[in-house]
Length: 290
Length: 321
Image (cartoon, rainbow over all chains, first blue to last red; front, side, top):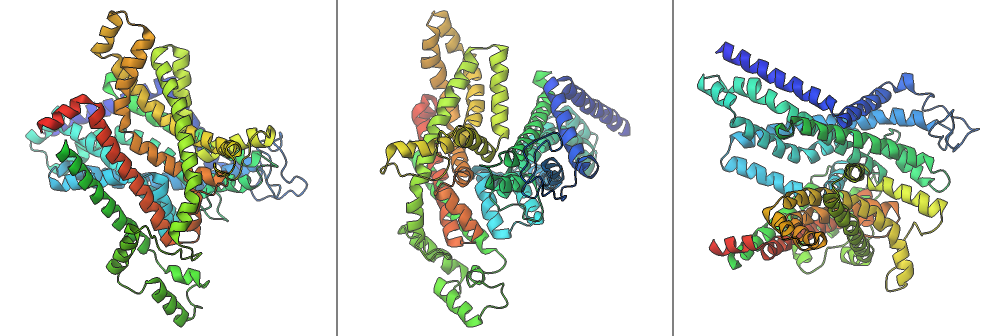
């Protein structure tokens, strides 16, 4: 018994290792991973890496256009915009990371339960998913913000909830395909206990699929948080995120375009990199493309 | 076919009732009371008698099921109640603002299709690397760019630098057709870019599937002109699976309109919704969300019927059942 499991685990480990090697072999996947890494390092290391303090006023240089000293220009109080973008990124990335975690865990549990309860319970659970998937995300987001406010905590919960249904659908189909595999049959025939099959066999094998999904959810969470903050309904001052920077910059769009354009570019690059990373992971996982 | 239509109609109505209950309940889960906000207090310094009077006037002292039925009864008579905030009838607010949104979404849909269909078709005909990576790069970029970023970039280029097009407001088409179209152009392009990317993605994979179908090979073997193969065989067959996306596209249009109208200061339903969220004006909010849900459910219903008409295989199967 333990031998069988050991062999299985070794194979599984090998499969997962291969996936990441394949991911890094594709140039787009490798570049996307590098860009994501750079952004995360830049944002988390903002206190050390930012050229100026994000709160340092400079009344001689209000709304200064981009220059070597201030690559992204300065804002209405002469603060360095690059530094503000790096610091504001912490709010954006933290919200996205927590929302992704919530959506992955709740969605995976939801999908797994629906997969194992294949009767009417599972059917009802998936119908609920279908209904929520139908509505445009930004509209549900707006209603939930109206109902629960836009503190950082409620934003995290709202975004986590918004992306859970699609995760649930993916998790369910991932588990269902694993249930047809030989190793599952082997594990059940040697009489391995259910918890062991679930945590030792099924879960590790669906992790790569879910990781690919997590990358895409994180991108979507950054996208929606920025949208809500841009409408003034997301992150509230004095906290700053990329979306709020864009919103305040938008007010002075006609005189100083850089104020909103640079945070916008940063949002686009981050979302693009995370989406590409997720897609490359999916490709790397797809056996038909090996 | 008749039973199929009937069954789909019943599920659609059921979905509509379900979403109306959901919208109503979610908006009443809110901690606090909209009336407190309206009386301009933080909850402690409000005169309790004024508070009770207002609650009574708005019907908020009745039970939830009563309030719900009262609301639905009004909706069925095309009366969405009074705005908590401005005291105007919600129906008037919505009909006043609908024109700006309808014009925006229609023009954007048209432009989006004009971008997406040729791009996806050319992508499946010219199977060369350069165009292929341009197209997938373009769609990836389109999917990653929030419409407020596109909008801001377009405003900077065409409004600020070139000063070619108006960037704010709305002119009704009946008042001044030329000015009206000029004003809608930038917002519509912004929204079109947002919806084009997912359409290209779906249409392209559908075209690739159809291109390897036996009847396409037969058509090629018969020596038909390539133009004829693409226009008569490839595109029509590839469009059918894309139809299931129409519901999603409508959703994207409505959701996108919220952001785009805000960026371009267009007085439409989207900006009405943002204002309603700011002001916690639930009467307006629940009407708008119900209308959006209705638009979505009705489109999916129509698309399902169209599907049966357009795809002969489904029609036959429907008759057998």
